[in-house]
Length: 153
Image (cartoon, rainbow, N blue to C red; front, side, top):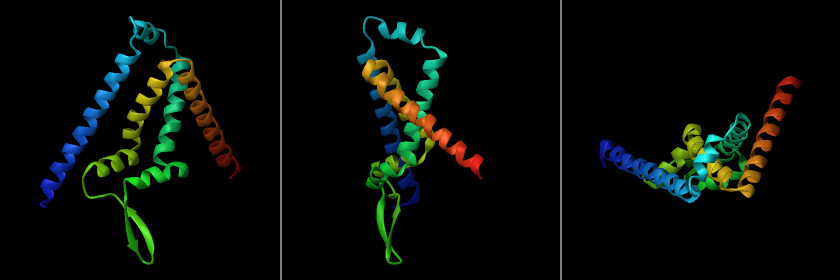
């Protein structure tokens, strides 16, 4: 397969994932919209709400892209290769698994999807706000842990 054809095919998968994001975002918006209640909620968001959601998004980015506990999911999208008596993992050359691997590797891309998840949870009700709060507290804990490690050095 020619190099340009491989990249063109991958662009198609990237476009499909982008359209999927827009469809999911639209569905969430429709589900949350209840006689203009969402408009009222959006107008009443304060700095504390933004801070909590931002911390939760940060935590999800770390979880999806870096944390060991989520590594098994990231490995679903990689190809295992035998190398020097061990196994190494590489991104597939093309296809939907390649796009998913690229998304999980890119913190900016993961951030957009995480922001969608956090926003949907936060506006879905008390349970969603509780989950977002847990993620935000975990993010602060992670931040304080990293600061204490830097100070101890």
